[in-house]
Length: 144
Image (cartoon, rainbow, N blue to C red; front, side, top):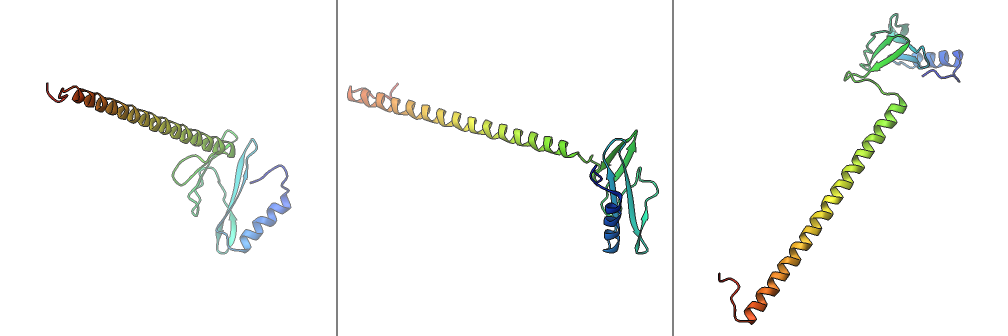
């Protein structure tokens, strides 16, 4: 990933390193507008520049590069858009919020169920006391 702090020679040295140690492909992504990418793939033991990156699909990674109007879009092997770091953080935060909301909802349902069980037990005990009192008075509460 090219950033404002990168310099050409260190990036070329990095590409040479990956070429020397057998990487099958090497890509440099320039995220700043107008964004673009460069890529190399191994052919006959050396890196060869990928002539047209727009529409290129990585044989190794299965990712596809699309360039349009100065924007680079990268799609994963599943066809889904690769997200930016900020988008990934937002997606993770949204998933965490949803999980927390579901946890709170389940907890509330559990508390309601406990309250209903407590009330039912109180009603059962009250009915038992009333039935016992009726029996003391000589009335069978089960007769109708």
